[in-house]
Image (tube, rainbow, N blue to C red):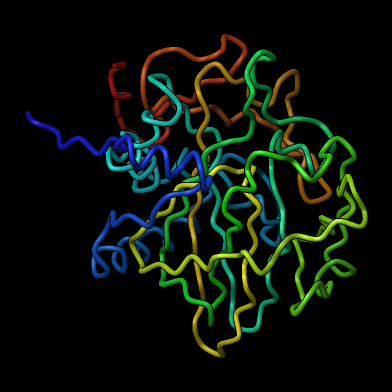
Amino acid sequence: MDITDFSLTEQELQQFDRDGFIGPFTLYEPEEMMQLHKTVRAQLFNRTHAPYDAPHDVAITNYDRHLDVELLTRHVFRTEIVHRLRSILGPDVICWRSEFIPKYPGNEGTDWHQADTFGHASGEPQLVWPEDEPFGGAINVWTGFTDATPENGCMLFIPGTHRKMNYDESIGMTFDPVANKDVVKGQYARGFNGYDYSTLQKDKGWQPDEAAAVPIVMKAGQFVIFRSMLMHSSLPNSTSDKTRLGYVARYVPGRVKVYPDTDYVKEFGGEYRLDKFGVVQVAGTRTDPQNRVASRSLSGLDLKPLASY
């Protein structure tokens, strides 16, 4: 059976290398996404096989639901996504995390941030790349389950900022969902899920160049690909009735170590066991031998990773 090739062109790769992001691309038509959103939202309430046992008011509750919700499992395997990721990461690609990122009417914006090791919450790296490689971080695929507009809190990117980390994630941050909710920075109140991201700044006097920021306007069903080390934030949701909902899946090459030497993920002021966690191989066959590899039998699926080049 012929499969359409969605690999990035040489021109697109050059653009991605220059800017740190590319897209949006259309994955679902709006009506299709509306039905997908409705179905998935209902399935999220069933936490029988959810990866983390956490209180419902903790954001990690709906992390990694691609491990137990079939439609999300199929989403992270979509060839429209995986072909493009292979263009960037090479033949062996794993999905190591996914999460829903809602912005409800009246919510503040999200603070400017970058992620390399994803150790910002605890100071301990969640990703470890081979030492001889110049790049770290992850490739994020952010899919709009709703439209994303400047009014309801779309993302902002500062092109080209993925080449230098402005934050030291090894410092770690203190989780305080009350004190860090409405931190005013620049024009807007900008929280970060209970953290003040500026505490990680290497240069306390540095400020992001917000004049260079680009709003990422998307239709429901579209996705954008970006490096986690790219400076990104989001606007506040200034509407009274329009929730902005994104679903981000995070990918790395198989050779990257994920949650090295730990049985817990530490986020949002707690520790959550990794017993039900595993990376999912979406392309190729190789992953670091220390990585937990998920069994896709949780949702009764038998999806196969795309073959190597």
